[in-house]
Every structure is written in structure tokens, then in C-alpha cells.
Picture (tube, rainbow, N blue to C red):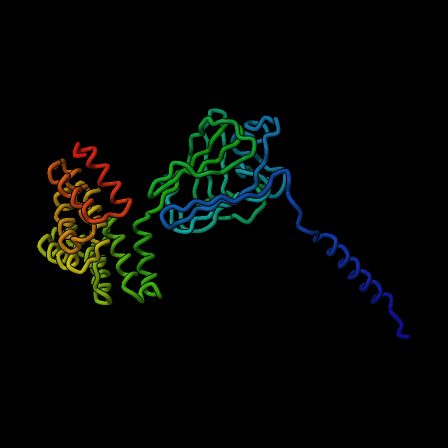
Length: 363
């Protein structure tokens, strides 16, 4: 039998002890009951804001000024420096922006950040975004890692037992991220340049499979039309769509863009071409679009064309009657609703024509 030397025996014993300690220290994943982890996310335009945090409870404790001290406070662990509140519990509260954003009026590049707050006795406070989002809580906070530090004003709020992040006051381009806990609310306004982001994203998507068919270019141009942005680029996109497959939809988008550029003569020409090839449903939908815009004469012109193309369809006459009714032309409204009822209408069309005729005193 081979003899084990004392040195070899000692090294073997050390290795066995290390392996044993390592095995026991790795433990299984178990629920974290006192301050459970949570994630909240909000889409603004096509951008997302996500907050990952832990949720401590009030549990009858005095929160502000005691559990969460006012102002900046020296930590009793880690680097033991003055630090803000970690805005939650346990690990860093982390906020992630999918695109460049504006936070409380300050530019913030896309990415993840440690989210911190301070609170003062007069309900003033401070928002801090740190480029270090990997550390545990505030123990290793370093001021030099701050990307942003800006004052905020806290609000009174209904009692919230479990610390909660939420998004409120959503608009096309913005939302307020709020932290609600105990009877205070910490508001943070977040904004994105939605139109710029959508247009830049469209340009990238059109370089891939989205750009392999007419619908991709048409939808990108239509976004520009509906949001009144970058019509020059949109004209190029819709021309590409038309070259791939000329149809009612992309011709109408081009007509709309030309109107935005005050090229009314060319817009009218393109719209006439589109209406000539439009289906019953497409023309009817365009007529209602004009009605929603309060362009009653334009809607009557388009819906009259549809009755000429599809005289057998009761719905075309019902739609035209509705346009006249909304304009206030009672005589022509009654006339067209009666034609609708004579064309063997569906139950829905019949109900609409009958309703209007009763309202107009013709039944």
C-alpha cells in the first residue's frame, strides 16, 4: 500500500473541508417572505421601463425618519459611506430603459441603473440613478457612479402596507413612475421621444423581413402620416410600397402625405385612383374616417361613389344616409335610409336605418 505523507494528508483534508463547506453554503432557492421580490413594467410608445425591487411591509412601524432615515445616512456595513435609501429592500432596486429616455427633464441613456431616493421631513426628496446596479442595497453606494441626481416633491397618498411601484398619468410620450409606501408617494416623470424612436425602429425593421412586402413600407409611411412626422421619408417608403403592390391602402396613404405637403392637385389625382380600385368595405371605411374628421361633404362624396359602385348593397345607402343626417340634411338622409330598407338589408343595417328614420320623424 502506498504511504500518504503528512503534507499530502493535510492538503487532502483541507480540500475535503472546503468542498464540504461549499456544498452546504450553496443552499436551495426558497421563498423570501418578509420582502418579496417584484417586477413592474410599462410600455410607452414602443419603449419599456421596468423596475425590479423588493417589497417591505409597514408592519406598524414608523417608516419615515426612523426605518428610512431622513436625508443621506452613513452605512454600518460595506464601504460605510453616506448613502441614499435603496428605494425598496434587499438588493438594489433596478430600473431599466429600453431606449434613451428623459427622466425628470434629464437625459438618460438606455440601460439599467440602481434606483435610490432620499426623503426629508418637509416632503422634499431626491432621485438618484446610479450606474452601479449590481451592489447590495446602499451598502456599497459610491457617489461617483451617479448618472443623475435631481430633486423631487413627495405627495400624500392613501395607506399602502406593502411597498409598491406603479405607473400613472400615461400619455403618448410619457408616464409617471410612482413609489407608494405608508402614506407617501414618490413621483418620477419619464418621457420618450416616441415618434423618433418609432421612425428609427421602422427604418431598421424595413431592412429585414418586414421590408420584404408592401405592407411594411405602407405601415411605416402611415405612422408618419397619422403622427405628422418626417413626411419626406414617408413618401419614399410609400412609393416603395406602391412599386411592390399598388392598392387602395398605400395609394390613400400617399394621398394623405401629399395633402400634408400642400400638394392638393397630386393628392386628388392619387385619391381618385385609389377610390377606383377600392373595395366596398375600404371605401365605406374611408367615408366614416372623413365623418369622424367632421368632413361631411368629403364623406358624402365618397359614400355616394360607393352607392354608384355597389347599388345593390343596402349598407352603402345606410352609410350615405348617416352622412347626410350628421350634416343636418334631413331630406337626403330620409331618402337614403328608405332606399337602404328597400335593398333587403341585414338585421344590423335595418336596425340602423330604422333608428335614424324614427329620429328624423319619418316612421
